[in-house]
Length: 101
Image 1 (cartoon, helix red, strand yellow):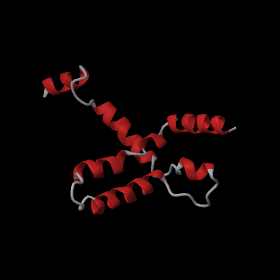
Image 2 (spheres, rainbow, N blue to C red; image 1 turned 45 degrees about the vertical axis):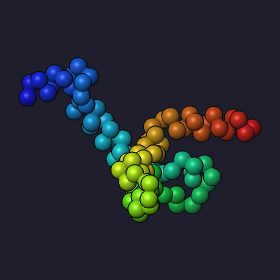
Image 3 (cartoon, helix red, strand yellow; image 1 turned 60 degrees about the vertical axis):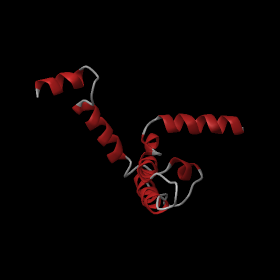
Image 4 (cartoon, rainbow, N blue to C red; image 1 turned 90 degrees about the vertical axis):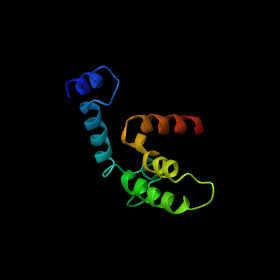
């Protein structure tokens, strides 16, 4: 038990604090509206979590196709928009807007 705690503290594993931070970010995605929809002023935009859940289900269905790695497909679908829960997506959108002006 003590060795598990020390390995996490040394960077060899995921610390409890990092896991909690990640789960807090994921929780925030339930109420975070998709940035692209907000930017385009879409009425009642879906949340990032709604979108990621639907994409995960789509990946489950699509992964029945020959040559598609189910695990990779589902993992990518579930995490592909996590950045929308951070400030980085807003910086990216601002940079895009500056390019188009």
